[in-house]
Image 1 (cartoon, each protein chain N blue to C red):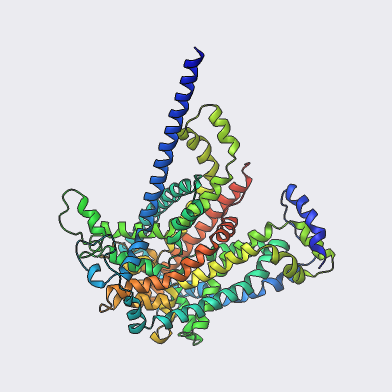
Image 2 (image 1 turned 60 degrees about the horizontal axis):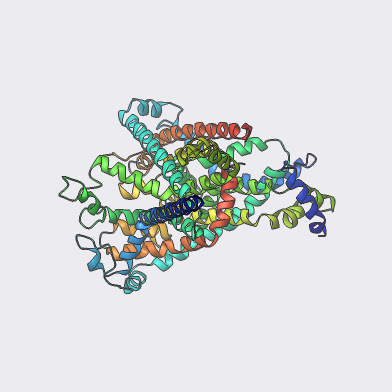
Length: 292
Length: 309
C-alpha cells in the first residue's frame, strides 16, 4: 500500500519534470525563432557587406555565408567619402549632445524643483513640440535658414537638432530629478548652497542614468536624422552619414556590397553604444514614459 | 560639501514615505534664468518656424491674408485620400506595434539564462539608423535578388517574384512592416518594465485559486499593464504619423501615391512642387492633429495618475 503511493508520487514527479523540461525546450525554441526573425535584416545587411558581390547578386539568394570578402570595406572607403561623412555626423552629434545637456540640465531642474508662473504652459509646449511631426515645419525652417544664411552650415544644423530633441530630453531628465528625495535638495540649500550649487553637487551626481539617457537620445536623434539634413544641407562636401548613404541609394552605379558595407559602418557606432548602456537607457526612458 | 553623509539617512526616510515633489516658492526668479537657454533655443528654431508656417498657410500670392490654400485643400480629393491613407497607416502600425511589442516583452519577461543578452539583441533594430534600415529592406525586397521573394514563393500560386514596390497593397504592407520593425523595441522595453511592476503576489493568489496561464494573463497581466498600453497607443500614433524617412526612401510615397501619408505629402508639396504655402496649409492640419494627440496624451496620463494601483 505505502509502496504503491510512493511509486505514484515518484511517477507524478517524473511526469512533472518531463513537462517542465519540454516547456523549457519549447520556450528556448520560441526565443530562438523570435531572435532569428527580428535579427534577420541585421544579419542580411552584414552578410551581404562581407561576402563577394557576385554571391549576393544571384537568384535564389543563399541564406548562409559562402565566402568572405573583407575588401568590400576597403573599396567603400576608397570609392566613397564615407570617412568624411562619419566625421561630419560625429561633429554634428557631438555639438547636439553638448548643447542639449547645457540647455536641458537647468531647465529640467526648474521644471522639477521650482515653482513659477508658466511652468505648466512650458510643459505643454514641450509636449506639443515633441509630438509635432518634423515634416510640418521643414519648409518654414528652410525659409528661416535661408534668411540668416545658415544653410550649408553644420553647426546651425546641430543647433536645430538640439532644439528638436530638447523637449523629450527635458521630460526624461525632469522625471529622474523628480525621483530625488526632497530632503537631499533641502539639505543642500540649508547647508548654504544656492540653486546652481545644489544642482551641480547634489542633484547631478544622483542622476547619472538620466544624464546618460539624455546624451544617448540626443546622439541617436542627430545621427539618425535625415529629413532636416536633406533640406538644409545641399553641398555634397558637407554631407553627414545619413545624407551620404541616402545618395548612395539613388546613385545606380553604387555596387550592392558597397551599400551594405556603408550601412554596416554607419550602424556600428549606435549599436555598440546602445548595447553598452542599454540598462541606463531602459531606466531613464521608462522613467519618462511610464509612472508608478 | 558635507551634506552627503548627513542626508544619506534622510534619503532612506524619504524613500519609505514615498516621493513627494519638493518645490521652493521663494525663488521664482532663478527659475526664469534656468529656463532661459531653453527658451532662446526653442524660440529661434521651433516657435519661429511654427508661427512662420501658420503665417504662410494664410498668405495669398500677393502677400494678403486669405484662406484660399485651405479652400483648395479641402476641395481636393487628393488631400482626403492622403488623410484616409494616413489613418489606415497609423491605425495598422499602432495595433501591430503594440501587439509585437507586448509579445516580445512577455518573452523577455521569462526567467532564463542569457536573458540580458536576449533583451539587448531583440532591441537592436531600435538602435539602427533609419537610412541603413531603408537600404537593407530595399535590397531585401529587390524583385530580382531580394530574399523576401523566397518567402513569397512559398505561397501557393506565386511563381514569379512580386514587384514589391509597384503593387499598392504590397508597398503599403512593406512600409508598415519596416516601420514596426524599426520601432517596436521601444514599446517592448516600456511594456517589460510595466510587466515587472505587476505584483507577484497577485499571480501567487491566482495560482492558489487554480487559474491557468491564460486566465492569469487576461485577469492579472493585461489589467496591470493597461495604463502603459494606453499611453503607448498614443505614442505609437505619434510615431507612425511622424514617419517620413523610411517611407520616402523605400517607396517615395508610391506607387502612384499608395504610400503617401501626410508627412511625405507635405515634403512633396514643398520640395518637389515648390508649393510652400499649400504645403503649409497641410502642415497646419498636421499641427492640429499633434495638438489633439498632446491633449489625448495628457488625458491618458492624468487618468493613469489618478488610478489607484
